[in-house]
Length: 235
Image 1 (spheres, rainbow, N blue to C red):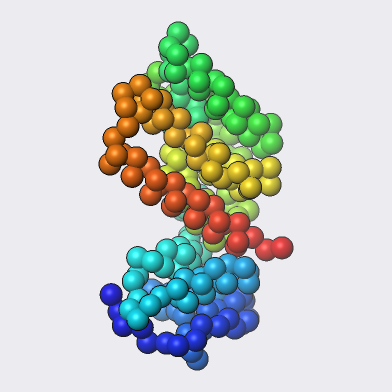
Image 2 (image 1 turned 45 degrees about the vertical axis):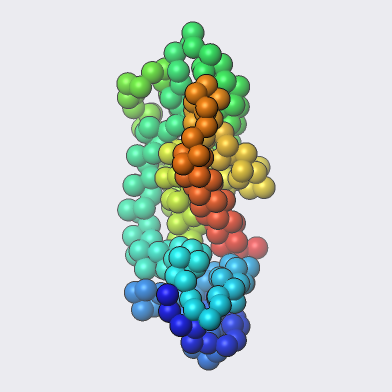
């Protein structure tokens, strides 16, 4: 905890974006760069985090600040590396790995996952390999190339949000779908679809409160990352 050292939180428009001001001092990233945010909407969201602090500052209650720092200090310098790292999640995308066709879980996966995956394929002009069982099968190189190109159209802030969502859902399709206009108002539904197998196990064997608590935290992180990416989008 850090004692609060400011009174007012305002925004200043700078060359290159908006900056949160703590009294007269502009917020900087962990790396020491000015924390310039691409949209006023995102800057307002970060300012709200600072305004909600009490007499002491809890760094854990500034998650949007942390994401912005990561976007500026890390992703901006090497967006190609971030995109390449996420392609691994496309290779083993949760939505592509199904139970054996004679298992009841497969029917649920077909009902929930197949419409999402098929819609994504149609929207992006790609084809994914569906896999029954756990043995890995590679995805088409053309699909991976198209997804890489799509990710490199994103600015560092959107790419940061995408990275967080993809890792939480173990699904690049889910993360990219949350950025698509057709789904940007439905991040919770996308998250719940990604958690289908966890929910299936809970229905079969009962709910463990620790597991449920972890899933709730991950859900909150996913929704926050979706909001971060949406607010970063220029209008």
